[in-house]
Image 1 (cartoon, rainbow, N blue to C red):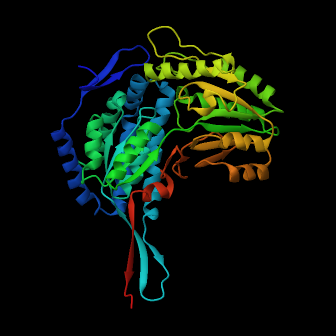
Image 2: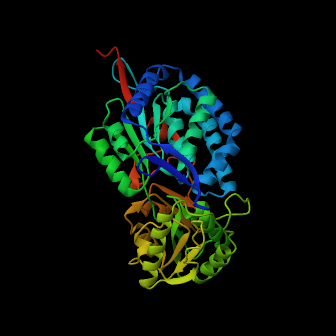
Length: 460
């Protein structure tokens, strides 16, 4: 049993093996693609109202096994248990929201023409192949699957190797909810299996949430097969605090935005860009709040920061921190790997970070906050946009007009004024630049894998 033949789930809190799942053969992958293709023929013809009813059943199934799913998340990738439980509830609420709001998003849209009648109808594309990450093992999957399934597509999940236990619990929830075989499939395959699936004519389109490197690989393969691809990749999100901001609110939002999920979030407050008039006060308050964070056993409800999900990721993060310090940044807190069996990294705060330093230019995927000083609002915007990423941004100011002006200049997929970034079904989620393309959630997420088909009747 090794990582070349099995997907291994290792508890990052103690290094013990949680599960070992043998990779599937080519024939097993072929059978899964047959099942999802067969299921699509029936699923697409079900009235959208019936598909919505099944989403309500899914919400109930998720809540029924919520504790088992939350415990599995905590064991497999180290998310503190309170945050893991919140993740499952968020998925149940997502399913309920789309059951209520989604059918209207798929209704035909009449359009005026000079003769006859015409409308745009939203048709499903077919089986969608999804490569999903470990950091939100259930939410990331459901965020893509729920609107995609409601639209009449089927969904084939290839999950991260370290969270396959979570993947099979998701599949179990779909079965409990009454979804037919093949509508939601889980495949446990290697990178070679991923390539085979993307190239297979039975797969209609591809979606990935992951790193830029993975996005380039998956996007290239999808492009070679002329298949639509949605990519939600990394981020190094700016968190702008201006001189007139409510500092206490800004500090609290920055704390959550940077350290939730042990800092392992794509859309997170990674670059804290603070106007120089308040940088000293903000830093003092943020440092005090960061020191109070409880790091420890992720199964305890008192814990806010658990272990990082993998040892190699902790090593990479530590290397980025050390490089930034060598480049001249100031270490205010943390900066060390915690000794022992667990994969812990101290909550870390860096100040005097400049636009030439590693923690400014690269994405830091862990509990590390970088404080950057901006001369004024214009400089803050320039710093915010000086990134290869463009996922989300936050702006803290009490001047609504100023917030709107800055928002108009920021190069990101989402902007949150006086709040940290979130993904919410009511609004579109996605990025630009190297943060990817395509959108999840809202009506954009429902229609992303639809054929917008023009039906023009009685044209003379």
